[in-house]
Amino acid sequence: MQQSNALPSVLRDLHAIRSATFGIFASDGTLFRSALFGRDALEASEDLLDFHPEIAHSVIRALAALQGRREAAPGPDTSEEEIGKIHHEARFRIVDGAAVDPQSQAIIDRLASRWGGSKDGFVYYGSIDATPLFVRLVSRFCAQYGTAFLDEHITTHTGATITVRDSLVSAADWIDQRISSSRTGFIEFHRRNPSGLPNQAWKDGFASYLHADGSFVNYDAPVAPVEVQGVAYDALRGAAALIRETDPLHAARWERLSQSLQSRILSAFWMPKEGYFAMALDRHPVTGAVRKVETLSSNPGTLLDTTLFDNLPIDLYRTYVGGIVQHIMRKDFLTGVGVRCRSLKHASLTGYADYQGSQTVWPKETYDIAKGLRKHGFSRLARALEVRLLNGMNSSGAHVEFLYAPVSGEPITRPYSTDDAHSCAGTNIPENAQAWSVSAAYAIKRRLGKGREEPEAPTPWHGALEQHILHAIPAIPLHVHAHDIEQETTPRNLSGINIARGKALETELPRSRHHMRLPFRHRLPAGSQLGS
View 1 (cartoon, rainbow, N blue to C red):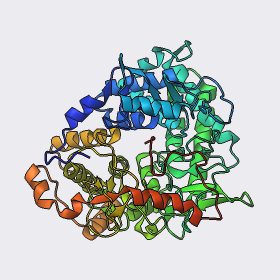
View 2: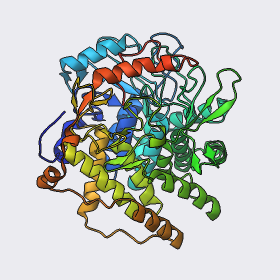
View 3: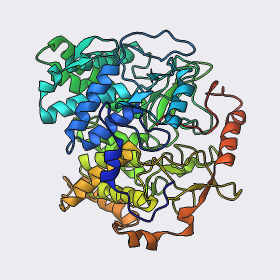
């Protein structure tokens, strides 16, 4: 972990993660260097779309070239490839004309044997959110820079020649097929490879999907994360708009599908008693009944950065948007460095700081939520999150993958591995120069650099709710100089993380949930994260 007192350079890190072949790498750290992660590249490209459209252009072409072209048979060692599907993770021995470093090659060797690759590399498709994110990015790119891009030609990994339009339609067809073939009417993950990732959305950590009683979701049946449905709604609408003139039948079908999907999301995931959305839907292991994963998580906060609520009657709009805003800015979620992945109400579920739990904050997700707040007219709340996000990374001295935020005390912005039994038990030291952390910081700094005042709330309802929340949360200034960071840094910020204890507790977790099956039969060593 970088320990310099210097503020991290977003320009330096953006340059470091740029790729001539892929557009952008997942990070410049040890685990994800030289790797192309579908969702990471797509989200970073969205963040940078206003400033660097060439990155989105390269990423879309790279992902279209690797897009699924066949239906891989389920079973051990399969890549989980499907026609139209955008991949999760791709690694190759030669990248941008040079051999990757030894550690990256070792990762290739280890994962290729499980995910249908070879010593020269692999493409693994275990992700359900990359495909709707891809369609949404194409539609947003075209909305800003024109549709001529759709006619560009691409050579696929099988040697076929297609256009960007062909790739878009194939990806939208995959979304359509997944929704239409599901008993719930949602996009769901259910791995086809016993060695594949069990959690195939962005929260892919070992304990990311837990019920409020601490039991794992049922991995033996499909699981539908709420945020994926919101992106799928955007994707269907965007794809329909782009092909309306050339393929009106397809466009009309996707419009109808998006409308029915919107209705199902609002009905199936909403928890009236809590006034908030469920994290996901899974199925009871005995009866097969669909049930809500009622654990209070940050996932619904990212729905604000979709168009899911845009055309609702005002009373429903205020119910859903107001519910999300009030929950996500409460003290059980909000920290001095961003939004926790899981509410502190569930902090005791694991007994350690799991990868995407109550004691971790991901800058990527905090920025997704901030974008949504700004979209809905809560610009001062968005600013409050953006300031916290930048302060966290500035205090870290790096654009880190995530930050530890213990239940009590200050965030740990500069963690190091230790065997101290009294230290926080966690499973990872965060990766440096993570792409979507870099892109978030870059976009925020470009906005702040314009020096504009935050706009007034669009309605009295927005203004009253925003003011009520601002009165309830601490006002935190932006730390823009190294001496600001030094003055704010305490011994707590530089605490150790007991990785060995965290991994041991993670290994024991399934045993304490004896009524649920261990979700990883062939998993990496406890705490290892080779996905992002």
